[in-house]
Amino acid sequence: MTWQVLVHGPLARLDERVSRSLVDTVPRRLSELASDLGNMTVALPVLACAMAYAVWRGRRAAALYAGLAMAAVPLLVIPLKEWTARPGPLEPWAHGYYPSGHTATAMVAYFGAALLVSNRLVPVAAVLTAVTGTGLVLRGFHWPLDVLASLCLGLLILAVSSSCTNRSSSRRPTGCSGPS
Image (cartoon, rainbow, N blue to C red; front, side, top):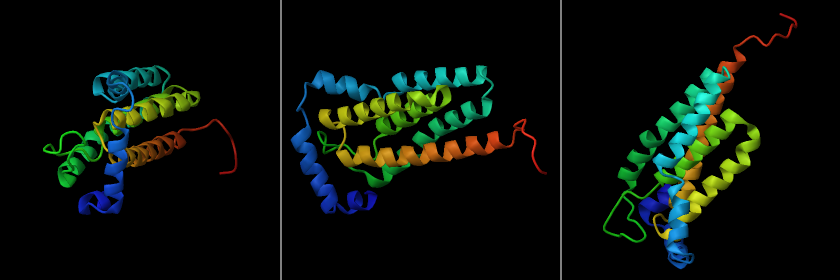
């Protein structure tokens, strides 16, 4: 995807045509509300509450890794935005739209919170993330590939965070006795 965006290849051109047909197909207020779910002022408090709950439940390492995962979002997204310098759908003079920081923020915050509180909340995290990305595209704040790239990046961040959490929790004694 990134290569296609950088060289303005056929996938990027298709992305732009699809986006133009989708922008403003729903009322702007609705698409803006949906895209706002990816704002740091909305998503970070959700993650912070889940982290506090995890610490209270004795899952300090999991809370730490969720926080580090969230900190990784701007550390990865901002350089990619600078490198690709993709113009926006409604602001062709502005650059830095690829990948979508709002989508990555929503994904890492909501999935991180769900995994800290209860795996049963994972579908809720998926819906919130999908609504955020859809709102960004329908409002014209991002191209569809911007959102898709952020979903891939968010998945990578969450996989690394989960791997670290699982590795740290496997070091704790389980109380099971078995062959040594």
